[in-house]
Structures are given as structure tokens and as C-alpha cells.
Image (cartoon, rainbow, N blue to C red; front, side, top):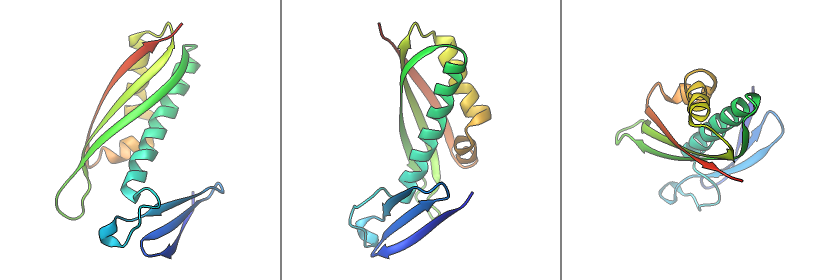
Length: 139
């Protein structure tokens, strides 16, 4: 896997993925940023959220559960000293579907956290990661 990061100006960077996608990242104003894109540390949380959401949806669908939506809300805390790594991350899943049962959703989240989501497992080396969820059964 490869990526390329190109400095544009001030604290603005263009990230290009090996799969051919691009995105803008910007630093905070105190480092010359102008709020033109997410911060790099936000990108870590976004990546982790997408990684685990993909797992949960895949696991539920593979089990023939009728999932119709999955949202992941993440809140995180960082340490006060350099390097300002994440110390706590809380992941809240909102899983919607038809006749979803709690054990299936709980199992999918657990499998993602403990076995499949590389991003979560890597971040768990420095941060305490907790999870909870809510199920919204739809007609």
C-alpha cells in the first residue's frame, strides 16, 4: 500500500491514495491552517470509523441480517504532552435494519474490534477503546 502527500501551501496538503483517490487535509490555524480540510488526526478517526463500519455491515450481511444503515460516532481524547496520541476512544454504533437482534449486532462489533479492523486494533496499542451501540429496527 502506498500514499503520497503533497504540500500545497501554509498547512494545506493533498493526500493521494494508491487506489487513485485524493483528499485535502489542513492543519489548525495556529500552525498556519485555514480550515480547508480535516486535520490529520481527524483522518485517523475517520479511517477507524469507516474500517469498523465496513466490518460490521459485512458481518451482518454475511449472516443474512437485514441491515439497512450503519452510523458510527466517535469521540476521542488525546494526551496533553507530545506526542499527543489518543488515550481514549469511544465508538458508538447506530445500526438500523429489519428484525435485527442484539446478539448479532454485538457479535459483529466485537469481531470487528478484536479480529478484523486493523485501524482499531492498531490504535488500541495507545488508546483505551470502548464501544456501545443502539439498534433501530425499521419496518
